Image (cartoon, rainbow, N blue to C red):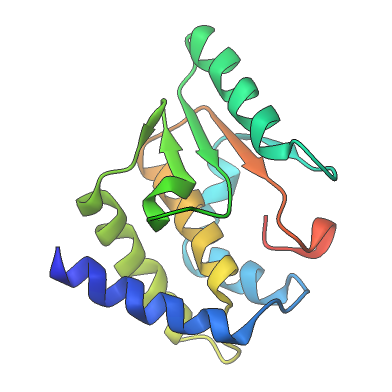
Length: 149
C-alpha cells in the first residue's frame, strides 16, 4: 500500500523531534478530532516493568467477558500497525490509512506540531472510536503522567 507507506514515512520524520513532555499538543489534536478518548472507558496501565504484558492480559480478560476492546501499546517491532489492536486483531492497513490521513491533516493545522508519539496515540484513540470499542487498554508512554496517553 504505497499511500500508507508515504504517510508512515511522513510520520517517522517526526521521530527526530524526540520526546516533548506536556499535554497541550495532544489536547489540541484530540479536541480537533472531537475527543475520541471520551467515547469509551479507558484502563491506563503504568509502571516500570511489565506494562505491555499487563495490558495484553487485561485486554484478554475483557474480551473473554464479551467486551469490545482496543489495545494500544508501544513500541512496535516491525510495523506501526502492531500498536493498534482491536478485539485481538491488529488493525488493517486500509483502516490505519484512513485514520492516519485524518489525524495527520489535523496535526498539520496546529501551531505547535505534535510528536510521533502524540500522533500515534491520537490515531489509536480515533481508531477505537470508529470501531466503537467499549474499553481501551492503554500503555503509558515514557512521559508518565505528562505523556500523550
